[in-house]
Each structure stands twice: as structure tokens, then as C-alpha cells.
Amino acid sequence: MSATHEVFNQSTPFEGANLFRVNRPLRDALRTWVPALDTSGLDALGAEMGSAEMQRHARLANHHGPQLRAHDRFGRRVDQVEFHPSYHALMGAALRHGLHGSPWSGPRLAHVERAAGFMLFTEAEPAVLCPVSMTYAVTPSLRANAALQAVWGPLLAAREYDERFVPHQVKASAGRAVTMGMGMTEKQGGSDVRANTTRAEFDGEDAWGRRFALTGHKWFMSAPMCDAFLVLAQSPGGLSCFFLPRFLPDGSVNALRVQRLKHKLGNQANASSEVEFERATAWLVGDEGRGVPQILAMGALTRLDCSLGTAGLMRAALSIALHHVEARHAFGKPLVAQPLMKNVLADLALESEAATALALRVALAVDRTEHAADAHEQVMRRVLTPVAKFWICKRGAGFAQEAMECLGGNGYVEEAGEGVMARIYREMPVNSIWEGAANIMALDLLRALRGADVAPALEHELAPVRGAHPALDTAIERVLQGVDAGVPEAQARILARDVALVVQAALLQRQAPAAVFDAFCASRLQGTPDVFGLLDERADLDPLIERARPVEAA
Ligand SMILES: Cc1cc2nc3c(=O)[nH]c(=O)nc-3n(C[C@H](O)[C@H](O)[C@H](O)COP(=O)(O)OP(=O)(O)OC[C@H]3O[C@@H](n4cnc5c(N)ncnc54)[C@H](O)[C@@H]3O)c2cc1C
Image (cartoon, rainbow, N blue to C red; front, side, top):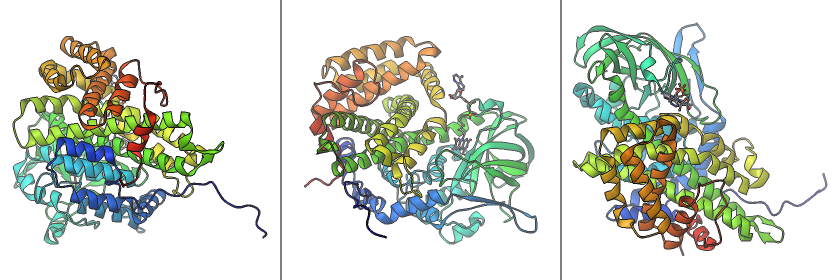
């Protein structure tokens, strides 16, 4: 064949960068809020996650998604999921870096360090972080059964991943880690879990406490190859929380049947299953009839991870967009030099930094309440968990669409999984839906307002930035009024958005240059944030873009 054309003016893959070193907003946030933090682990993680090798694993794990083996060839039930080796490579890396149970036992990471690591890992691959997140989040719930916590706690924090389908004792004797998932959602109700119909019948008592036989189903139960799950079921005392392992203590397989894997929009590397329990053995965690608050101690932390995950995906999409617009020329200039493109990029950069800041603020509140009884931080943790999940995750899908558009048609193309931007776009909405969709988060904010004196706590939180920007002052007054007086349910999203925006502004005032803070206040607090790229003439676009560029400072 003769040559028909030369390929030019195309971009290159964004790979080989140390994702921590090139992320100035993240590094500035950590420097501001936890100045003593040793970031060498994050530096190593950033290098690994930016590597071409990890990107290849991410592509393969998503392109060759999990397969269910419900039965063997003789018709016996197997109930196992098979993954591409790249899935296991990613899981191995996540556990090696302590993104699962490490803040709770063993050589501990701070929650905020783990949160930063979770964001960096997300930039490479978010889907495998589903079981990693659930394993992180389970400890506050599991503690309510001291016998289980004593056996499983150390295994949840071990750093070596073990992909085998074997009992926890086998993993323990090899010094390997276990992972845990959760099963709440049933066909007839996900948000309204009180509608659960799975039955729990008392079956005796043993070293792990009160034992029950569970019969019923779960319509969504992700990562069914986890070693154990917290599930909700109706016992004689009401809806209760149970620990349900895949293997029983005698080494036999528990009666959990994996019926089907979901065929999902995104999140392809992660297996999300439908399961049935046929008198599956499970142990009570916490008090009978108190299942919802018991499992929500886990849900609150997975909600934090939804915020972190979305902030990480925003940063990934922004980095790819910024990388692309420097290489691609149109109408005689690199795209990054076109004034209107600058507006879009600068606006995306503002959103990405604000999301990172707010998600980290929640993680900081976890550190400050797990290690000390800090009443202010307790309120911030309670209030900002649903607020952050609502607002950051809700902004994610629009963000991904805009970042994709920076790449033009190439952004929309997957090409055997190589098109990372398309993968990010398909992944983005899930964080808004699972672990409580947006309305549920906004309603949870109203519940938090009823349970604590939130207005003085928010006033205290925002006091350092009073007078910093007129738009922020006005917004703070409006928020405090709404928080104090309460709002009708139908207005809950408005209040959740406003709390998110004033807290984001306050964080940026401390951790970012004035150009970022001013542009954020002018664009987010005076009028409703609409599509991206509407920054007015007051915004100084170049420094905003320069700050976000995914390159190491000279
Ligand atoms: C990929 C994926 C993985 C998942 N993995 C798991 C898992 O591992 N374990 C698990 O338990 N679940 C899992 N889920 C389920 C998920 O948590 C639920 O889908 C979610 O909580 C919503 O529940 P639902 O689907 O029943 O929707 P519904 O509860 O029917 O809600 C539908 C809509 O109605 C809104 N709504 C509900 N009540 C109100 C109200 N009072 N006022 C206003 N609006 C309301 C919701 O915000 C939502 O937008 C997963 C879901 C997905 C997509």
C-alpha cells in the first residue's frame, strides 16, 4: 500500500507522570491542613499510578470485565467470579499502599493520607476501589461485635492481597488480607432499606455471638468475591445488621448464591452481583432491630469515598484535557491558547480543586474525631459527609462531559479501552447513585440539622473567612439562616449545594492563591453555577490553568 497521509497534530497518551507531584492543588491542601504529614508514601503511589504499566492494567481490567461461574461443568454450584489478571494486579497495588483497612490497625495511615492516596489511585482506576472502600469502611460497624473484630480486624488491615477463594483462616496463616462488602439493597427498596424482606432466623450462639440463618436476596451486592459482608435482614427483633462470611468457620462454603452479574454503564472492572441467601449463616452485629444505624457507620465512610473518588476522577479528566490541549492545534494555535478554551479549562480547574478540598476536609474530620473527642469536628463530619457526596458527585457527570469535549471526537472514542476519557465519563455517575443517591444525601443533611446544633458549628468553621469576599459573606449569611431555621424537604438540595459552596470557598481561601479564591467566589456564589466556561472578565485565566497543569514544578 502506498502512503495515503501522515498522522500529525494528534495528542499522545497522558502517562509516565508522578500523579502526586504534578497535582499542586492536592499538595497545597495537604501542606495547609496537615503540614507534618510525611508524603513519601503518596509520592511512591503517585509514580506507580501514573505509570504506563498501571494504565495498561486499568485498560485490561475494564476491557476484559469479570465473568460469573455460577456452576461447574457437572452442574454443581460454584458461585465464583473470575477476573482478568490485571484486576488482581490493581487490587494488589491498592492493598499494598494501605488504601483498605490500614487507618484502623497495624502500621496506620492517617485517614487524610489514605484519602489522598484513594484519589491518586482513582486517577488510574476507580472500579477496583469498590471492595477496597468497603473494606476500609467496615471497621466502625464491625467493632460492635468484639469477637468478630478481634479475628477479622487485623486481617482487614494486612497489606498482602490474596485472590484465592479460600477460608479466612488460610489467608490468615499466610499473613494475607481479607476484603469485605455490604448488602443492603433489595429489589423492592434501596434507599428505603426498611422495606428489606430477607429473613433472619435465630440459629444458636457460638464464639462469634448470636448466629442466624438468612433467607432472601440482595438486588445489588458488589464485589461478591469479598471474604465477608455486612448485610441487613429482618430478625424477630426488627431490621438488623449481620456479618455473613463466604466460608463458615469449619471451612465449608456458606449458602450465598451469586445469581447474575449486572451489565453496567461503567464500573466495568468491578463485579456487581445479584445474590440469594438459602439459610446462609450470619452473626449479629450490634443490637437486634438497630440494623440501619449499625450499617450506616460503614455507609458514612463509603460516602466519603464516593466524594474522594469523584474528586480523583475530576482530576484525571482535567489532566488528560490539559495534556491534550497543549498538543492539539486548531485555527493556527494550540487549543490551550484559544481564549474561550482557556475559560473552560480554568473553570474545570476551579471545580476540580474545590472538590479535592472538600473531600479532604471530610477525611480530616474523620481523623479528628477517631483519635479525639472533638465536638466541632463531630458536627462537621456528620454534616459535610452527605453535603460533599451530594455536591461533588452531582458536579462530576457534567465535569466529565466538558473535559471529554476538550478532546473533541477522540474524547468519545474508547478504542479497546484506550480512550480513558470515555471510561471516566461512563464511570462518573455511579458515585452519585450508590451509597445513597443525591436526594437521599440532601435529606440526610436535613436529618443532621435536626440531630445537632449545626449553625454555631458552621459559623465557627467559616469565621476565619468572614470579610474575605463580599459574595462569600452574603452566601454565609444565607446558609446560616437556612441551617438555623431549616428548609422544607423540597428545598433540601438548594441548602446542600449552598453549604458545599461556602465551605469550598472557605477552604480555597486558605489553601489556594487569591486568583483561585476570587474566581471561585465570583463564579459560584453570585448566581447559580451553570455549564462550565462562563467565568466573567474578572477571572485571571492563565494562573488558574498554570496551577492545574499536570507537570512537575521546575
Ligand atoms: C454499580 C452499583 C453497585 C452497587 N453496589 C451495591 C452494594 O454493593 N450493596 C448495596 O447494598 N447496594 C449497592 N448498590 C445499590 C445502590 O446503593 C442503590 O441503587 C441506591 O442506594 C438507590 O437505591 P434504589 O436503586 O433502590 O433506588 P430507589 O431507592 O428506588 O431510588 C430512586 C430515586 O428516588 C430517590 N428517592 C428515594 N427516596 C426519596 C425520597 N424520600 N425523597 C426524594 N427522593 C427519593 C433516590 O434519590 C433516587 O434518585 C449498587 C448500585 C450500583 C449502581
